[in-house]
Amino acid sequence: MTKLQAILVALGVAILLVAPVGQGNYIIYTLCSWLLFSISAMGLNLTLGYAGQVSLAQAAFMGIGAYVTALLTLSGIHWGFATVISITSSFAVGLVLGYPALRVQHHFLAFVTLAFNTLLFLVLRNEEEITGGSFGLVGMPRPSFFGITTDSNLSFYYFSLICFLFSAGVMWWILRSPWGRAFKALRENPIRAESLGLKIRRQTLLAFAIGSAFGGFAGSLQAPLVQFIEPGSFALIHSLKLLLMVVVGGSGFFFGPMLGAAVVILLPEVLRFTEGYYLIIYSFLVIVLMVYSPNGLIGLGHKIIDKLRPRHEARRDMQQGAQL
Image (cartoon, rainbow, N blue to C red; front, side, top):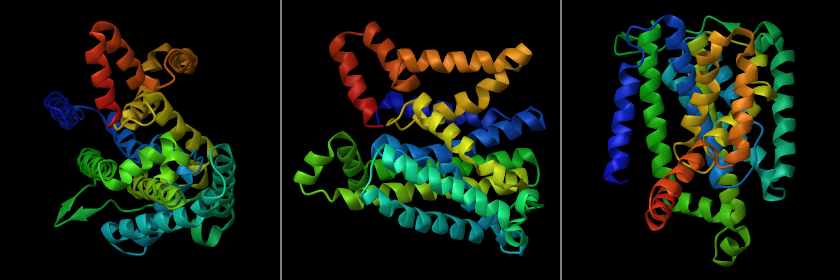
C-alpha cells in the first residue's frame, strides 16, 4: 500500500467513525446495512473478481449464516459462538456446492448456484417447525461483550464497523497471500496457470468456499440487526443485488465491493427526494455506468486519471490499483 492509499484509507475510516453521529435511527440502520452487505460483497468479489467464477448464491449463504445465528442465539447461545458456527457452516456448504465448479465454470456454474439459491429459499419457507416458514424468526438478541451491549442502533453500528474492518483486513491478507496470487492467475488464464503447476480445481473450490464464509458472516450480523428474518430476505433477487454491487463498484478491485454496496444501498436513499422517479433515475445511472465503464466505478476513476496524468504515470497507477 502506498502512502497516498494509506492516507485515503485512514480518512475513510475517520469518516465512517463520525458518519452516524447526530443521525436518526433510519440513517444509522441504512449505514449498518451497507457495512454488512459490503462484507458479503467482498466474498462474492473474491469468487467473481479474483477467481473468475460467477455465483448467484451469495444471498443463500447470508441466509445460512442468518438462520444458524438466529436459531442458536434464540436458544441462549452467545452471538460470538453462533457466528463461528455460522461461518463454518457456510464454508462447509460452499465446499460441497463448490464441487460442481470442478467440472463446470462461468455461466454453467451460475446455473448451479442459481438452483441452490432457489432450493434454499424453498427449504426455509417449507420447514416451518425449524425456520418459522413464511412467518420467519423474530426477537434475536443483539450481542453484548463484557457488559457492553449493542442494543442501540448507534452502538450496533460501531460493532458492525469493527466487524467490517476485521473482514476487510482478512480479505486484504488473503489477496496478498499465495492464495490470492493463485486466484488472480486462475482468473487471468486458467490454462497457463495449470501449466505452471497450479491446481486450478482446488483453488476454484477454495475461492468459492471462502467467499461463502464471508456471506455467512454478513448473515450472522443481519439477524441481530433486523431482529427479524424470513425466506424472502435471501431470495434470488438479493443475490442479483450483491452481484450488481460487485460489478458496479469494480470487479477484481479490493475497494470495488464497498463502493458498489454504497451505490446500491445508499444511492436510492439519496434519490428519495425525487419521489416516484428515484428508481428510474437510479437504473438509468447504473446503465450509463455499465455502458461507458464495464469495469465499474473504480475503472471509471482509472480512465479519468489516465486522461489527466501522463500516460506512463497512469499506467503505473492502474497496475497498482489492480493489485488491491
